[in-house]
Image (cartoon, rainbow over all chains, first blue to last red; front, side, top):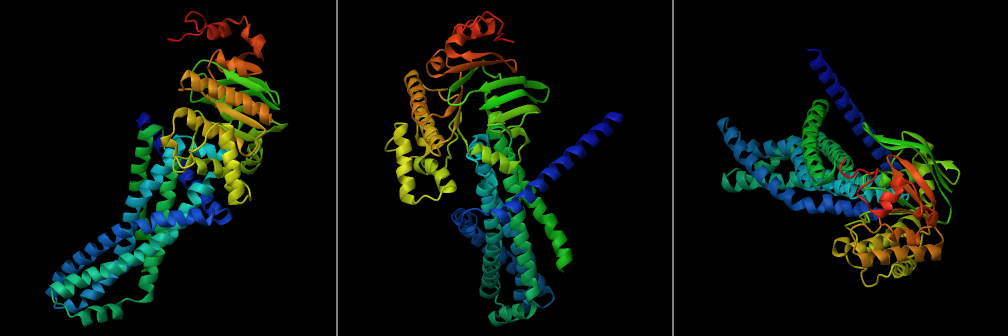
Length: 256
Length: 249
C-alpha cells in the first residue's frame, strides 16, 4: 500500500514537473515572439508551409464535412418539416464548432507532426547545439516563426473551411435533395451573427497557438534517436488534439 | 585563456567528470584524448556552455561561464566556433546557405560580400563547386570541411573540435589534420581537439591532456606527453590490451 502511494506521488510529481516545463516553454516562446520574432522571411516560409500547403487537405475535408452535414441535417430537419433551415444548420455547425476544430485537427496532422519531427531531428543531430554555439537563439529561428505563422494561418484556413463546407452542404442540400437555394442562403444569413464568426475566430487563433506550442515543445525535448523523434511526433499529435478539444469546451462555455 | 576548476558532471548515478581541472593556453592547439565513453565530448560541451557542470568553474577570459545567463553566455560564445562530431550542418540548407548562415544572421554584410566571404572560407578548406549541394549529398570528409568553413567564418578566437576525423579514411584524416594545422597557422585561434587518433593527433597539437575516469590524469607539451611513463597513458598510446584500462569491464 505504502509503495502504491509512493508510486502515485512520483507520478504526480513527474506530471507537475512536465506541466511546469511546458508552461515555461510557452512563456519563453511568447517572450521571444514579442522580443525577437525572427526574420520576416522565416515567418513567410512557415506561413507557406503551415497555411498554403494545408489548403488542399482543408478544402477536401471541408467539402465532405459540409456534404455530410447537408445529408444528416436534411433528414433530421425533414422529420420536423423544417428542411428550409438546412443552410442555417450547416453554417452554424461549421462556423461555431466544426470549422475551427476540424481545421485544427488537419493542421496538427499535416503540419504539427512535421514541426515536431523537424525540430526533433535537429535536436538529435546537434543542429540546435550548432545554433547555440554560433550565439544564435534557437527559439528565434525554430519556435517563434512557427508560432506566429500558426496563429495567422489557422484562422485563415478555418475561414476557407467554413466557406467550402457551406458550399458542400449546398451541393447536397440544394442540388441533390432539392432544397430551395434562396431559402438555403436566406436562413443562413438570418441566423448567423457576428458573434458566431467571432467565436470561431477566437477558437482558431487559440488552436493555432496550442498546436504550435505543443508540437515545438515535443520536438525540442525529443528523446534519443529515431525512436525518440517518432515517439515525440505521436505524443505531439495526440496531445495537441486532446488539448484542442478540452480548450474548445472551455471556450464554448465562455463564448456561448 | 580557458580554465576548468574542480568541474563535476554526472548523469544519474554515473559520474562523468570528477573534480576535473585543466588549463588551455591561448593560441595553442590542445588535444584531449582518452578512451571512448570517458566524457571527452561532455568536457568540450562544458567549455562552451552547452551543458552546465553540477559544481566547479569554467573560466573563459577571466569570466566564469557557469554563472552566466542566456545573454551573457551568448556574448562569450561569440568568441567560439565549434566543429561537431557529425558536423551538425543544417540539413535543409545547401552548403552555401550553411556557411552563409552565421553571416546572414549576425552581420549586416550585403549579399555580394557574403558570397565572397563564403567562397573564400570554402576555398580555405579546399572545397569548390559544392555550393548547391545538400549535406546528405556530401561525403563525411566534405561535411567536416564545410563545418570547419562555417566555424571559421566569424573569425573566432577559440575553436572546439569534437572528434573531427572519426569515421574517415586515413588520407582524409590526414587532410583534415593538415587543414586544422594550416588554418591555425593562418588565423592563430586557440584550438581544443577531442580525439583518439593516436599518434596522428600528436603531429598537430602543442599540448595533450588525457581524460580517464573523470579526471585529467596527465597533461603537458606533446613531446613530454608522448614519453609519459604513466601506465594508463602508455597503454593508451601503445594500444595495448593489457594494463589499467579494462576494455571488457
